Image (cartoon, rainbow, N blue to C red; front, side):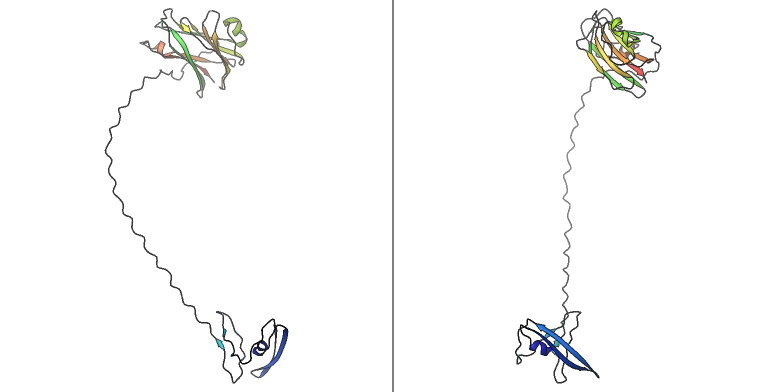
Length: 268
C-alpha cells in the first residue's frame, strides 16, 4: 500500500503485491488515481487513527510502525450554574382607609304586580276603577314571556286635574268584530282579542300596531276610539284566559302616586 501511494500520480494505477501473513501468502491489490507523486527520500507520513476506527498497516520486519494512536479527548468541564439572588420583598405602604360615600337613596320603583292567582275565562269582562280620580297619560307599554303566562304592562303617569274617575275595562271578543264594536284597528293576527279600554281622564299621544313574539299574544294595537278613549287590543288564540291587576288602585289605602301600572297576564 505504501509503495502504491509512493508511486501515485495523476493517472490511474493498479498495484499488486504478495504479502506473507503468518504461514500464508496474501495477494494485495490497490488502485490509485489523481494523486501527486511522493518523493522517495521524504520520511513516511504519520497516520493518525480516528477515534473508534481501525488503521491497517503492513510493517516490514526491519522497520518501525508509523501509526500513532489518536490521543484521548480532554473532557470539557461543564459550566457551574451561578445561583440567582434571592429576591427581597419591598414592604408596601399600607393605604389609608378612605371614607365611603354615603349612597344616595334611589326613588321607590313602581310597584310590580305579583304573579296572578286567579284567571278570568269564557269571555267575561272585568273593570278596575281609580279611587283617587286623577288624570293620566299613557307613558309606555311593555311585554314579556313569564314562563307560564305572557305579561303586558301599561304604565301611566299623572297628567291634568282629572276628576271624572278613570276605569280600566277588559273585554274579550272575536278579532273580526274589534273594528265594528270598538272603532279601533284590529290586530292582524289572533282569532280572539283581549281589549283593555281606559275611560275618562286618560291622554294618548302615540299609537301601536305590531306583531309580538310571545307564546300566547301574537299582535298588539293601541289607538283612540271615536270618543278619544285609548284602547290596547291583544290578538290571542281562541279560549285565552286573562288576569288584570292595578296594585296602586286596589291597595287598602291608595295614595296619589305616579307612575302606576295596569298589568294584564294571558295564561299559556
